[in-house]
Structures are given as C-alpha cells and as structure tokens.
Length: 133
Image (cartoon, rainbow, N blue to C red; front, side, top):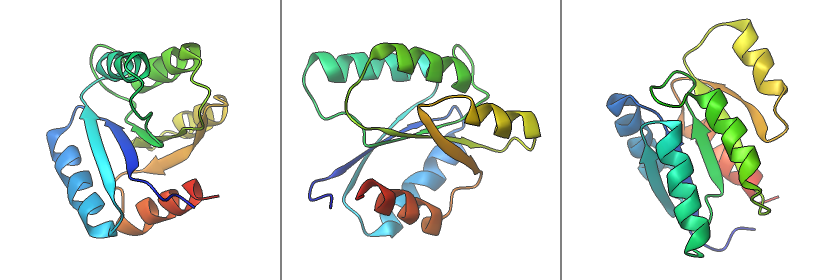
C-alpha cells in the first residue's frame, strides 16, 4: 500500500494534453505530485537531477511517442541506461493507432503497457492501484 504521495511524471509536448491530465489527476482523489516535461531529453535531465539530489523518483511515468528533441522511444532507451533500481511503472500514452507502436511497446522490458489517449480517470486510478501491489 502506498502511504506516501504518488509522484507522477508526464512527458508530452502538447499543453492541452498536460492540462487534461492535470484535471484527471485532481479528480482521482489521490495525493499526486505531477511533474510534466515537454520532451524526453527534459525528462532525462529531470530524472538525473532527482537521482543526484536524492529526491523521490517518480512512481509512474506516462510517455508520449511523438515529441521534438527526444521522442518517447528514445526516452525509454535513455531511461533504461540510467540504471534506476527503484520500481517505476512506465506507460506509453499515445494517440497513435499504429499496430507497430503498440507492438513496439512490448519490446521494452521497462514499459508496462500502451494506453490510448485520452487518459481517463478510471485508467489513471487503475494505474495507481497497480502501484500498491
């Protein structure tokens, strides 16, 4: 059971999606600290800073695929090389309807699954409950 604040990292370059996810987070009723980054490189820089300053690692990371600078797949590869030992649940959160993107998700051991946009309150609640096990 998670008895602390849930740390959520959302990586998405679309401000509207970030706004929607913030509203969904508020409606879950969970104590969630959400941080958003607009591309994979910003997220890697953020995680490196978190690790080096001994701040809490995100429990859950939601990753868009198509972003400038560093896309979602490049982020996952860079993330895996960080060597973070703590359990972090990574999910691709995308509007992609391409079967190869959904299949590619399965090729990364660090990624737990593919979620089609838009994220729902029910799906986020499920993800949080999975963190508790």
